[in-house]
Image (cartoon, rainbow, N blue to C red):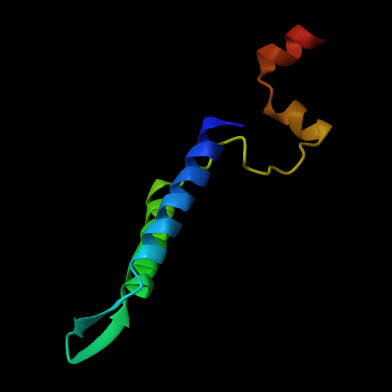
Length: 92
């Protein structure tokens, strides 16, 4: 197994154990409303949002290259028009 896979499995196990230990309800103040919510739910949602934001911030940027551009095929007569007089003399 790769190190990255082992790290992901271990980290997931640690997060799961942490969530299962913290299941008691606590009072949270949501700006206008106070509610009792399980720590499991709050920590789980925060972890999930953290993973999503981390992936979004760390994903590779897509770059456009000149190799990605799709050009129309060049016809042989157009190639001849693109040559200079010196090039035509050299080829002939």
